[in-house]
Amino acid sequence: MKRIVVLSDMQIPYHDKRAVRNVLGFLAEYKPDEIASVGDEVDFPQISRWTRGTAGEYKGDLQAHCDAGKRVLAGLRAVHDGPIHVSRSNHMDRPLTYVRTRAPGLMGLKALEVPSLLDFEKYGVTYHEEPYEIAPGWLLAHGDEGGSSRAPGGTALALARKWGYSVVCGHTHKLGIQHEHMTVNSRLVRERFGFEVGNLMDFKSAGYLKAGSGNWNQGFGILYVDKNRVTPSPIFIKPNGTFVVEGRTYGQKAT
Image 1 (cartoon, rainbow, N blue to C red):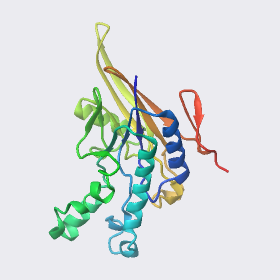
Image 2 (spheres, helix red, strand yellow):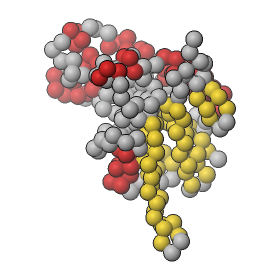
Image 3 (spheres, rainbow, N blue to C red):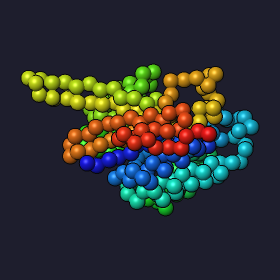
Image 4 (spheres, rainbow, N blue to C red):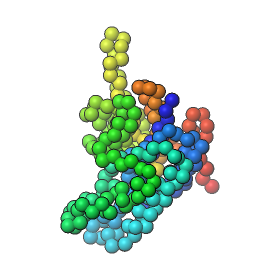
């Protein structure tokens, strides 16, 4: 059975370093067949529209954030020698959006595109600008391609209805599954899942969370692929940093 680990939004430098470290440790032991990421590896706050015209736009630390993202990719490659897939995402779109709106004369420079900024070729990362069929009947997407639901899994299920595939995505920072199945004459004729894989962020760093509260969950996902049958599994990361996969506890606890 093929096992694909789907990583959630990190938004470096707002990632939870312990959670990311624990997931890397898990990957080293678990040895999945593939790793996929829903995107938003790096936040790029300096070039966000929310930062425009403020001191944050002039900090000059964009390279430091890219370097931090590359260290995480290097960590992934160090523990995994198989395929790594990354979906486009709204935060990772920020460099080209900034260039297009503020310096259009620089459009077309490969050095300013995310795969170059984060050295995807060096780390063997395949970048997907469109939803990617990660498993039979399943698309990997970021999750910002449609409307947003407050219910975990609802955003992904809406995309599944729109595209006619099951969908695994991030963006909402929620962790959960919704699904709909249809049988006719006792025969399954439609099976669709909406699977959102949570996030790997440090909630205290997310200044836009009012009073630090929200219906977010730290975690990631696993897709078990048995020929044409795909079984999704959400992995919840507990507040102490641990998580359970296939009956085994992983992760270093908080001290």
